[in-house]
Each structure stands twice: as C-alpha cells, then as structure tokens.
Amino acid sequence: MWRSEPVARTPLTHREREVLHLVTGGLSNDEIAARLAISRRTVEAHLRTLFRKTGVTRRAQLAALSERDQIVAEPSWSEPQSAGNGPAVPLPQHLDSADCERQLRSYAAAMRGLVDRQFPLFEERVEITVLVGEQDGQDIVVERRWTTPKPYLVYRILGPIGAWTEALPFEPEDLALACEVNGQDVQVDVHPVRDVDGRPLVMILFQPGLQTDTEWVLRYRSPKLWNPLRSSGRDTLRWATATRDQRHQPTISELTLKVVFPAAWTRELVTEQSNLGVIETERLPTGQTQVTWLHRAPVAGAYHWVLQGSRGD
Image 1 (cartoon, helix red, strand yellow):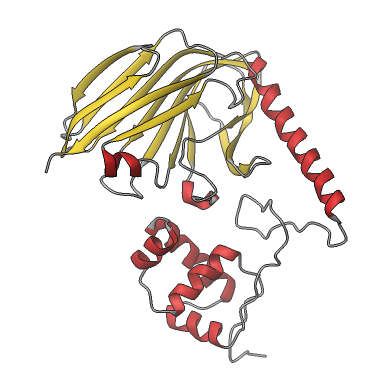
Image 2 (cartoon, rainbow, N blue to C red; image 1 turned 90 degrees about the vertical axis):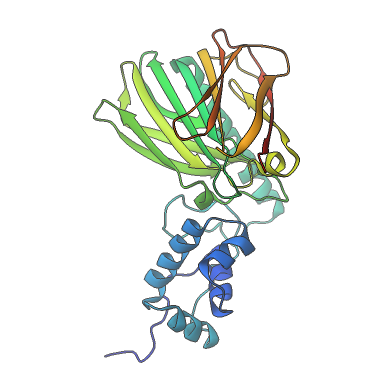
C-alpha cells in the first residue's frame, strides 16, 4: 500500500530540527551556516541526512512535512550520542539524579583510564599545522604524527585544537574529521566524543594495531578558532604535551608548530611565551606566509604561543 505522504521513521536530532526549521523558513545553505555558526558543508550533510530520514528529495517537501508535523523529534535524553549516523542510545527513563551522577562518574573514570593507559604504549614526533582562514569556517588543523609503539598500540585519544566553550558549543560534525595511516595497510576509525565536562575528544582506533614506526595524519576543521586573530590581530594558542591537567610526562621527542597565514596578510609573527624553540619564516608558492616553530626536547606541561598578524588592506 502506498502512502500519500512520506513519514520520517528515524527521529531527528536537535541540530537536524534546527536546520529543518531554517529550511522551512526559506533560508539558503549559506544563511543557515551563518545562523548556526557551522560550515556550509555541515549544513549540506544535515540536509542529506534529513532527506534520507524523511524519504523526500526536495526542500519544499521537507517544509510540507514540517507543516504537517510528520517529522519525529529525537527524545530529549542526555548525551552521549553515537558517533556515527545511527540513533542515540537513551539513558533509562527511570534513572534519578543520583543514578545519573553515578553513571557520569563511571563514564568519567572509564575515559580517564583509557586516556591514561595510552601514554606508556608509544613515543612520537608531532607536527601541528594550523591554517588561518580568511574568514570563519576556513580554519583547518592538520596533526601529523610519527608514532613508535611500545610494543603495540590499538588506539589514541586526543583533544582537538579548538575554541569550544559554553558560549561556543562543540558539535562533533563540525570537525569534519579525516584520518589516514601512510604506507601501511591499517584501517582507521575516528570517533568524536566528549569528556565528562563536555569538552571534545577524538578517539582513533587502528585495525590492526600499530606494531612498527608509523606515520599518520589527522585533519579537522576548527570553527571560530582564529576569530580573535582576524578581528584584533592577536591571538593565543595553548597545547598540552599529554593531558590538560598535566598528570603525565610527555611521550613526545620533537614538537613542531606551523602557522600558515593568508596571502594578503602582513606582519605575521609567532612566539612562545617561555622563549622555547627556534622559529623560521618563509613565503610559500601560494603567497601564504608560513611560520615554523620547532622544539626538539618537549617539556612537560603546556606550551603557550602568541600569534600576531593583520590584513594588508
């Protein structure tokens, strides 16, 4: 039997309903991206998911479904959600506040244990490249790592570089994560998750696990990362060698930070507040300026860089 109107069988997430509401209001993809502070690419991904979940193929049909209230909202249970496109896993509805608190503590302990257990299992060189976009939505981070397992490594958990705060919430899809292993037949699964305080983490699973020296690359977008630099000409970047609370010694033998400024900018400058490392500046064939900071004996704790730059106009 045919239905005259398609009905969404899979509930929509909160963000998908936000996109749906703006589509119904007649906003373009660029306008939706600006309104929600996400990239156009992320908006397009949400639309593809909306079309898949509802069974329609046009924006006008989405609007018609919304007007008839035939789209189901995802239940408002607490995070975490699944990292992929599948539905979220609800917390049992009978949990009281004490039960929720116990589950949160259990989750926090499990995540802390996973983070802690990885550090004795590897050493590595790290090269971080941050590309400063001409405008918000174009800031990209590339983390290249040369990892030596001790003796076997099946996962890594990292804190991505970003500007996430309570005012600038973390949305996993905004990262547009991509990860690959160079020169080896190793499959990689990447999952954005949150720690117990809501801050982003990236869990990387290697299959099979790493047994020899391995080069791998993690790429992601970082919304609003360099907005202060674009508006004021000055910004800071902090990066921990192990964990944010500095409870581990670094397993890094060499650390490089590369900052790529837009071609039209002038007075590009990067300094480390403790005057660690050596710095080189070069003009790339693209016209962009790359400032490279290198430290061959990383210290325990966190680095604090100051970036300066301005448009040439």
